[in-house]
Figure 1: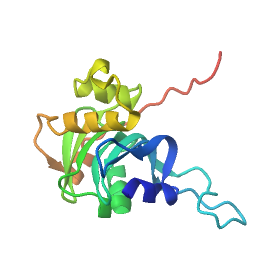
Figure 2: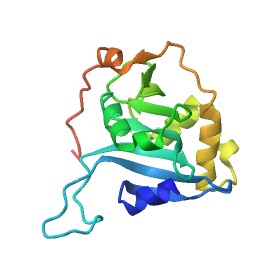
Figure 3: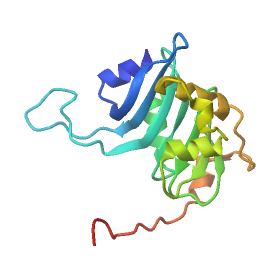
Figure 4: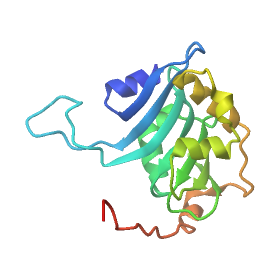
Length: 191
């Protein structure tokens, strides 16, 4: 299975869940998906002994079969990170991949067609991506009641298949001309 292979390569980070769904042949993951690995720790050759990844899809939810990503959800901090995702996982995506992602540096929803995949992108302000996605897809908490964590990702996938963004698809290059500057609040910790 694809997700088990990625896990063995230490590409699944801060894992909330990874495992088989009740649908034969499908596995689900929630956590961070590594786009650029951290450096190996000095003196180590163990693949799991790396420093923190340099780039991830934050708060990802993925549904996959044995070799393809069927659904991906999560947070890109910058629109251009789509390139990193496709470069790293292009072998595991196809035009049938359903991609509903949040992006911190866009101001309005957009669709980007890149390398045969249509990425449905939503602006991200704050909050948990999972909860924001449930709301965007009109999934009630009651719709998930009694399901395993893995099967909840199937529910997201089924709803995401019909998710529409009103603007027509554009190229990544066009999308990059529409990004915004993100201002971070520097105040952290107790006052």
